[in-house]
Length: 110
Image (cartoon, rainbow, N blue to C red; front, side, top):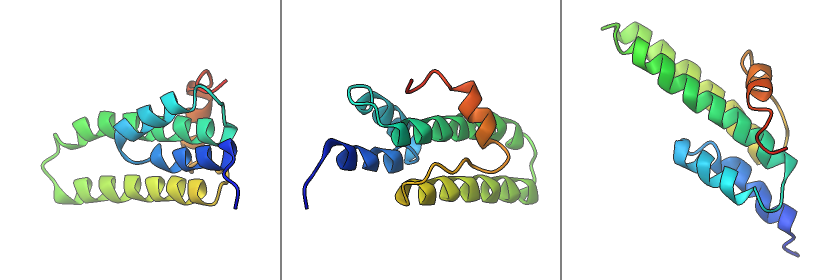
């Protein structure tokens, strides 16, 4: 098996979903040799992480385990959807929010 720059760079799509720091690492390592798959998943992961932090601040104000649990289940499902897409080397947008993230962060990776 031969290691090409594209096949090595594809793993950065998975790294993008592993914490916000992973997203930043994938973004900077993808700058030299642009890979459309990695750019796509960096935009998706960045949008998920920022939205999760923003909404998490407000959800934390509710002192309810039902609201907190549903919040975490929702975001875990979205992150898993993104990770499985990255593992399968597919450019599937996360449901509901994916097109918005692609449009909002369209300057990343272009």
